[in-house]
Length: 165
Image 1 (cartoon, rainbow, N blue to C red):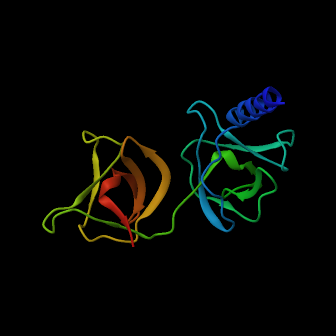
Image 2 (cartoon, one colour):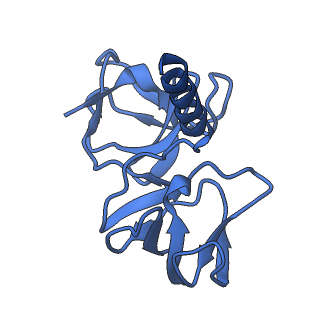
Image 3 (tube, rainbow, N blue to C red):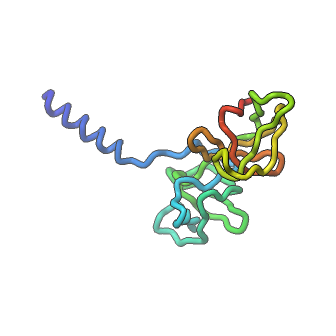
């Protein structure tokens, strides 16, 4: 009996390890961005909640402004992307945070550089005040860097310089 139980547990573990990772939580009536899509591919916006449904348009990695318009059905969520309404698979959607983050750990006579790419050698888009708040966190992070939206700009900052309100 024990070898049978171990065998079943091994099969279950293998099954769970083959499932794709789930994206961040999805929230109805909230903005989301396209994630988990290769740079040479698109997320298909479909006519219905199925991979067999017709394709309305494609959305590239990094596209934000995708609104989830209601409750998801299993892994499929009803969305609007500005020009089309359809269905997208939840694995490829990342929720945009509310504007609740602030700059922290920056001297009062200094500022936080908002950069075009996640690198200290990247071009500075703007400088955020040391007490800036109302920062939106986008669902992209890399090597300690976080993509944000602040004061009409989108760019990258070191995650260690952000705190929730």
